[in-house]
Length: 307
Image (cartoon, rainbow, N blue to C red):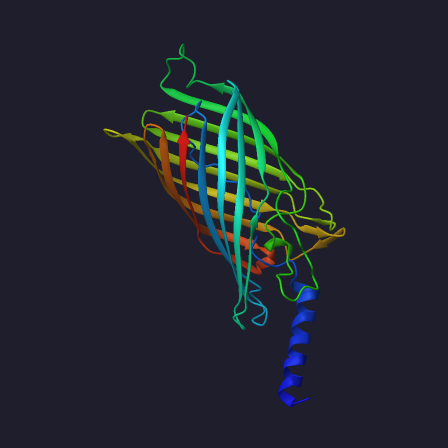
């Protein structure tokens, strides 16, 4: 065996043992929290497509392990009203995950169906619907809950050499998770304010891995300008996501969890039956996986059909 071969073998062995021991849980998370944002007109059902992209730099303290992940998803989503006060939201994402090892240039990809989710919200009050209300301030409040189903593939293999041995890179979590949510909207003339908060309680999957519970909150200010054939709605806001630590076989993984806050700028255009929109999210504060992960900007765009 040549000296160069021995060096490659030793380097590979050291890299693999380090990865197995300390870094298996570190990478940007494709199963991040939800973002409602501005949705089409209250009281109208819709179905649409939403595209999202997010990227992360991982293993920042170790150049030998440093990677860059990009998560893209195309999501079929919709809102329906089986009863006047009941709003049902459903979504099914398809992920295009890509990881690059910075040092070696090795590329790994995983394209697959993600976890579907179903939420039902109950309308506590909604002056937009009340024909007897004549105040200058219109507002609504909805509370509810839902479930994230384990429809996505989860294949976490710490000893895998040809795939990404990382639970965060999987299109699905492998668990059934439960969610609670609240959505508030207010409008005065052409100006409006939207806020929503979602808490997700994660279950344990068949591999005995449990992703940390997380809470997401979003607030935005928007301006609605009615033109001749359309309505233009620019918006500015903040989004925050806080995640607890993950557990693998009841062992807490310290290099997981954390928080991120982004500043958001978006625009939505509403036609008679269609709406299109785009949203840019720029991180302004973050501490992910005890500083081992750095998130870059996120981008979302959508098109919906209302009926």
